[in-house]
Image (cartoon, rainbow, N blue to C red; front, side, top):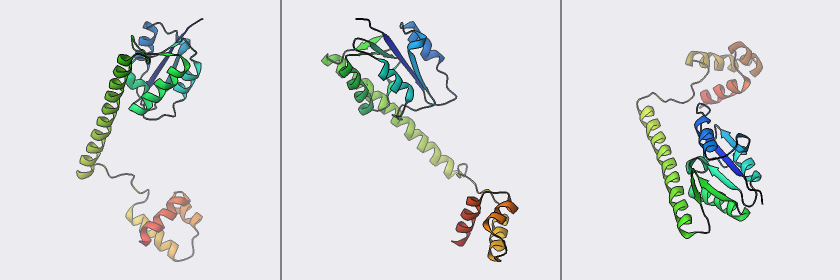
Length: 191
């Protein structure tokens, strides 16, 4: 039986680079044409086309390799589901140079511990982000999306609309905004 090494690399943001992960996979013996990637997708997002292609490419006896577990999944249930899917196909899972054997109790325990840490790390990042946003909001530095029109422009738009002489399209043209912006401005100023 001809077995293959299939690699998967992922980075969460468009600003990040996959080069180091690809090089790590190549050092582990994966050929560049067998490396599947997702760029700008988080590990908590299960809709990852590169991962789906990689999982579709593996056959019984192959080894599926990721540089680190957190590149594969950021939650225990997701990591477990992927590992189970690989196990059902008769595919080994390698995290870096360490091959996870799903039939071995120690291998299964080790994998679950790593998955728990990956999920914990993702939870910490979310918590820090929420805390940072709350602090910025309290300091007045995070105010959300600002209205396209100034208060003065909003009052004038409402006054002009109130005369009945201007249609929504006319107001959108006069103030150089979209029709939905005119509707939102009128709704905001009614309340």
